[in-house]
Amino acid sequence: MVTAGIKIIEDQRYIRAFNRIGVEIRDFSIPFSFIYEDFKQTEKQIFESEGLPERFLPLSPRYRRWKEQHYPGRKIMQLTRRLIESLVSVSADTIMEIKRSSAAFGTRTPYAHRHQMGTFGMPQRKIVQITEEVKRRWDKIVHRWVMRLFDKYGITTYEEYISFGGFL
Image 1 (cartoon, one colour):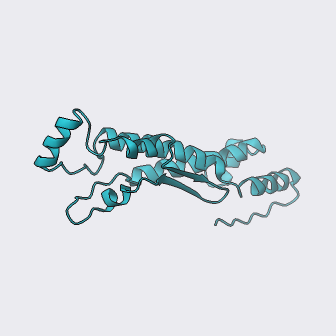
Image 2 (image 1 turned 180 degrees about the horizontal axis):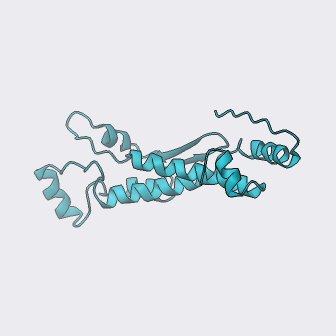
Image 3 (image 1 turned 60 degrees about the vertical axis):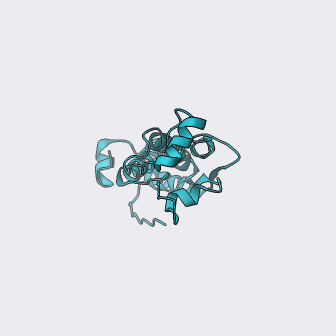
């Protein structure tokens, strides 16, 4: 939760603007929607690169031979494509729950957790990788959304931005 207090003497425009912004900022569903789109793109990159930045470990020689024989050309973690489809598009396994103050993205694919965490006999291959770079992108999405609220309610001059911490 974020709490801010501002005292502006005799300027009703600011009071009205901040009251409106205060109402709208209680609903993060808009930036969460953009974050979800970024999440899907990030997952697509992870699967297409076979794990970036943390590479998927190679398949065992025996399994690799079986896979090449039965599913030629399929990348690691894409045998049936059920897992990737649940993370980069919408399927029965997709988790995409966006609410006013929370969001959840992921997959209901039953074997996803075993791949993400690894098991005895199955190496860990992180299908979801929330890096510092990803976190920065998501921070920027929220920041831009808040700044658009400022613009929407008429707090738009450079001096006004500077007086609120220089958010440009």
